[in-house]
Length: 477
Ligand code: UDX
Image 1 (cartoon, helix red, strand yellow):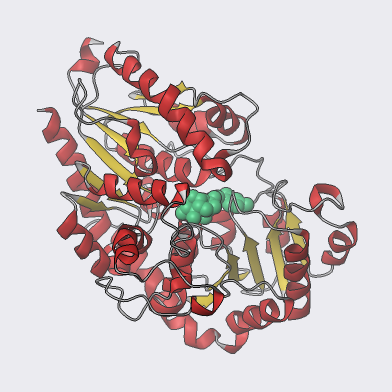
Image 2 (tube, protein in one colour; image 1 turned 180 degrees about the vertical axis):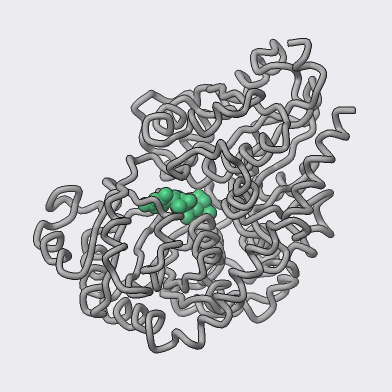
């Protein structure tokens, strides 16, 4: 303990959902590489699943100053609601986890009093900054800067009457007066929960409050990079005390690990489900840039009808495809895992379905030519870094704003927003794979280059991470 007291100590606590835990783990690995002492606090249930399905233990066992600790979210062990029952989860965490965390801090169960806490900004309520012991909170928001900025603007849009939206016919109206987003966002591109603008909606209130709270934290950490979201980042810097833009984290980690001899193999996986690596052999047998990779992240669910529209669209496009069909992706009842047997059979000619893929490796594979994605922020960044043009089918939260930026600002893909129709799926797949490919690939390649440069020595994200590590060390002195 004495040695532990004699150096900075960072407590990291991710929101309990895969899209949040994964980037926090990557940040933990980066901070561990810099020699900082880290305690990573995870919700029991999430931790057990990750230990079961990923190389979590071997990935971190090489850092002597790193340790995992777990805590309850106050819900039953077999609870599966997660992000889909947000208020159930957050109420329980506020009532049970928050006081327990304080107690663990005070009793030093989590080691010496942390120099700072890196807390997921989606539950910034978890730490009262004024309570003793006072510990600086760095909020890590795992979403894009543009969606964070859009969330921040919601109260004003409601106040000046631009929200609520007056039905479907009003969805294409342009949003006005959000600095830096002029002529970009329509009502339909606002983060879900807010696009309707019902002020009484508890999820809207929660999301907006957490966004406002995290802007007031000691520091705000974002998984993005200057050359992608510079204009919005400068707006955020004028509002928040301190912003670090240190992404794309997966590329940042890969770049800093490239010289490491003890690097864990196979590559770290991002999962709640066992990774099926057989799809890599399938990809090896496909021609260059011929395959559309289809994945809707870890939370999105679809109905049986939507699943069929995608299936027909993909088959009708005439392209090869690799489709991640998570055990809980389809809400329908027929067929194993909700997938009708004839569709599984009919896929075999030109397609491959897996339950969970090594996504980062898949996206880097030579055979991949397009990415049909829900535009979760991690997936979007992974697509960007691997130079894969995207077909976006956003579903909720930040995904709606991300997909607008992909298609209209960064021009690295097409946006299917609010439509699920086989003809459109087939047309957009062919646009990305052939008809509009030349037009898109210029910006796709340029954006990937900028992303990779930002995490190399001297790049903007590299420098911001160094600044953050120095600031943590200075806080301790
Ligand atoms: C959620 C929200 O949906 C998202 O909008 C928000 O930005 C973060 O939290 P999720 O839906 O899971 O996340 O999407 P995403 O952010 O894209 O994260 C999915 C992760 O799972 C990615 O890192 C991806 O590499 C990984 N993945 C996905 C796999 O490793 N294998 C797969 O088969 C599918």
